[in-house]
Image 1 (tube, helix red, strand yellow):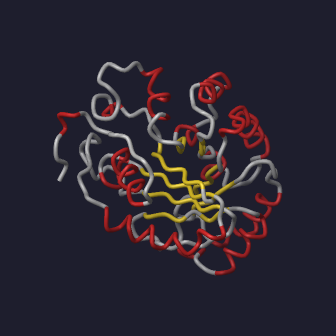
Image 2: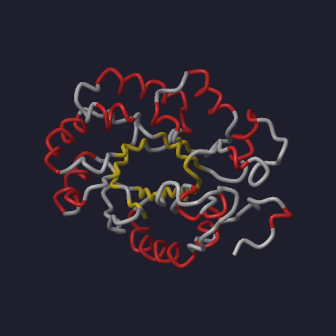
Image 3: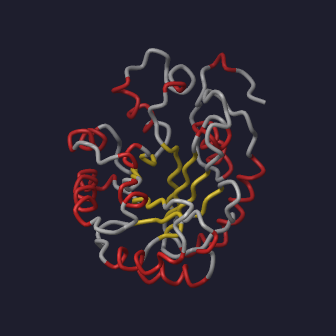
Length: 261
């Protein structure tokens, strides 16, 4: 039996007030509302810094059993320090994320487009020191990584290779762990609003589902997250994917929103 964890990247967007969240819903109630409709969330805010312990504790308290948070590692680790001399901030970040307890899913290490295979040695050293009680997933944005050598390296350290639907990058799944992690991204800023789907991505999502199916006998979980730039309104697109994989969905728009396309 494969567990599917489907959700969005971030949850506190102002345009969602009245389009996803009820118009007068207090900000403090947004996460519980979200967790009643999706069972996973990729935390984009952690990319910009380590959150306060009390914030993380509340995330754990207001979400139901079985919910998963997938935090992005701070950009200071992956972009600024480029994996060098990161022990202190990484330890602080991981200790903070452990407050989530059983709500903690894989941690995302998103590398910049100029992070190439000439950094392989640094990456191997970094992965060698990662703790075993937390799962990790990496996203590369340079084509030099796309070969079996990279897959073998990640398998050796038990790190997932993220499959991303993102502009010019290869849209492929390389299974390196007992779970899959997919990110559905769009070109930043291509939509003026984030209140409804502008593009119908159904055909693309069906192709992705077809590429996932051959792996299902060898994984225990599939994580899939959507951002607003992929089709215009990630809650609706996440629901679209849930329908394709035959999971129950909840409405994501206000009744008066009407037809999207």
